[in-house]
Each structure stands twice: as structure tokens, then as C-alpha cells.
Image (cartoon, rainbow, N blue to C red; front, side, top):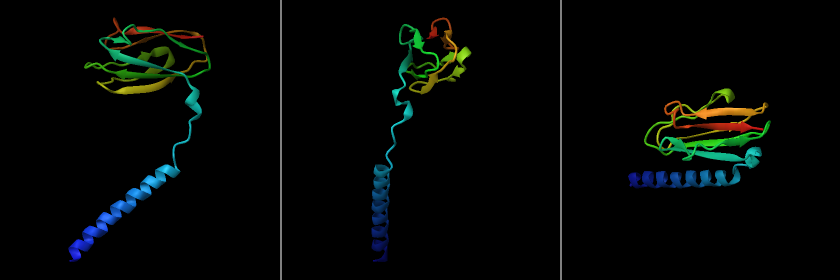
Length: 127
């Protein structure tokens, strides 16, 4: 009999904890971020290219631009912009990395994959 009581107590405890967790998440919902209006770019690394064409990425001086890199290839890739201190490290299949392009200086900066630099390179233009 006491065994049934313990099982009932454990079941009720899980129910109460779950309900409190759910209520807590509703009451403490994440607030809108100040960076919500930041424009962004998604680069997909696949078949030894970023977005099939290694597009030129445009950004404005003193205005951060969100950039996300997603590896959809079976091979590892990275995304590097030396002059802007961006380096994703190696991304395995389905891994992603998000950062921002931010520069106080206009210019054209090269991005590339260190594992496939001949086919995966392009430009970041900051105006």
C-alpha cells in the first residue's frame, strides 16, 4: 500500500513541477531584443561554395549586419574575414555560426573558407 502512495506522490510531484515550469515560462517570456532591426544575411556552405555563387555582402559603416553561416555539406567548412576578425572555426554538417559584420572603416574585405580557398571566397563591402 505504501508503494502505491509513493508512486502517486512522485506522479503528482512531476505534474506540479511541470505546471510551475510552464507558468514560469509564460510569465518570463523573452523580451524583444534591441538588435531585432539588424539586417542579416544567411550563407549556406554547400558544394564548395557559399550560396552557390559566393555573393558579395554589403554592410554600412557603424551599422552591424548579422551574418549566419550554415554548413549543409558533408564536408567541413569555415568562414573567415581576417580584416574584420571573423572566424567561425570548422563547421560540421548542419552546424551554424552567427556573428555580425561591423566596421568603423569603409572598404572591401575578403571572406573565404580556409579548407577550400580556391572555390569558396568572396567580398564584404562596407560603405
